[in-house]
Length: 303
Figure 1: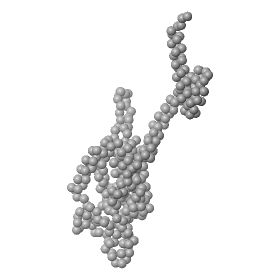
Figure 2 (figure 1 turned 45 degrees about the vertical axis):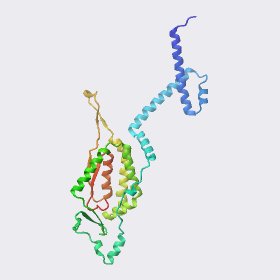
Figure 3 (figure 1 turned 135 degrees about the vertical axis):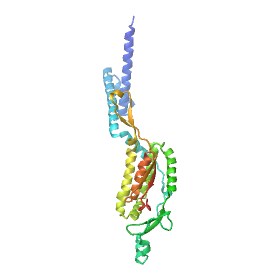
Figure 4 (figure 1 turned 180 degrees about the horizontal axis):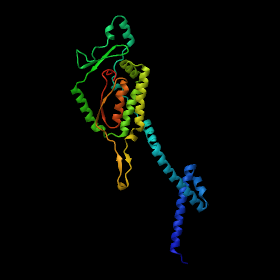
């Protein structure tokens, strides 16, 4: 009895194909039912053509799912949201409260009582912000109550140059940091701001003359939203942005790459001392830069 070799090869190939399809169907049933016995029983005595059909449908559905997830993720950044949510839940940021020294809050009511008793010197605005007796100090006062506040240093050119050089040296290392490391810094600042809302609002209200409600909405809320936006979108915004090329350059790839500039010099206005000072520091740090901020001389006590 003779047997054609090509027929044997065809039978072997068909048997191997059926085995592969059965394995795919078993995996699908096991995934849906979580029962290995049910998966094996469902295929016993099943028509091979039906197994092949079910296997093809499973493979097609899997491919369509991968393609759909790719385009949905590209448009809505689902994978980014999952990654950032997991990172935020697992990242235990440090508490920097012991390292931050806020100015001592002034009891304006007590100052007003003293003023009523004749101590008008405490509620008289200085004629010049620079202390005539000590030009290295700036005199500060509250616009709403005219209460004199603690003087702050009036830095000289050499002191500012030293700060800029220090920032330049630090930026050489900071620009190599990863986005998760930068997000950790922003989350640390966010934790501090949220845990010191009352103190920050009172400082800003005392120094700029605004109400604490205005400070809460204009200083705290906007700063926390800036941090949230950078945490959520910052890495996406700084990714290389690809550009289309013309047919003559179809073998080339074009993109815009965002790189740190170095040291940023910020001049902040007086009306929102906390937000205007920290706003550009946040974006500057997240983009890999160092930041030197010149706050307003009229709100330098709180800034």
